[in-house]
Length: 243
Image (cartoon, rainbow, N blue to C red; front, side, top):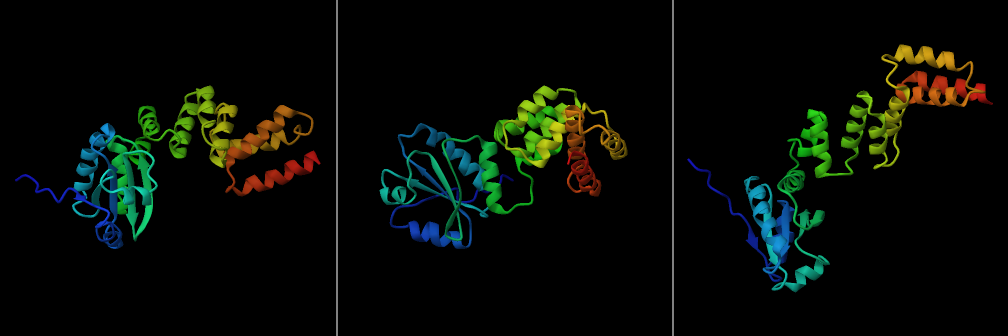
């Protein structure tokens, strides 16, 4: 038996906005699609929104606002270009995007409103973990920090260090980016924490007068990570040797 579709969307006016959007959002997340008949991208985005939100079976409500006929709503949202999409929960805007978006990104936007435990598309691609999947995740969100670090670490393990370091320049430095950069510079020579610890002990003898040894020492500390108790011990030992 074919699935019976829920009410796809509600047309909202300046007069009905408070009841159909603000009051409704106190119990159910509401997605507001601001559009106009002359807007080409609006006509491509509209069916995607309708399809994805219909799949929520009423957990999320879609309302549509023709900004030509309802200028007060457009003014309230300070709309400068359309399509413009706003999500409201508990009477407040919680997320938004402007312009036509692919279905995967619209689905991620709506899934976040449902509070669903289902993984987003980017989370699913990161879980797969292969290069093609991680690059697909970055197509959806080019500055996704987790996907960038995952891919950089994968490239480092395949001895494609230059690519890995270039990829890391797209995001701010963090402990994870420093760890992957250290992995690249170490050349993957150390396969266990015990090997790292032994090398740190060896390098302590020469770090004071050898810049390369000092950099390798710091890189190895990054590989151990800040949560390893040996990291703080060796940092103190390095400070003692240098000063």
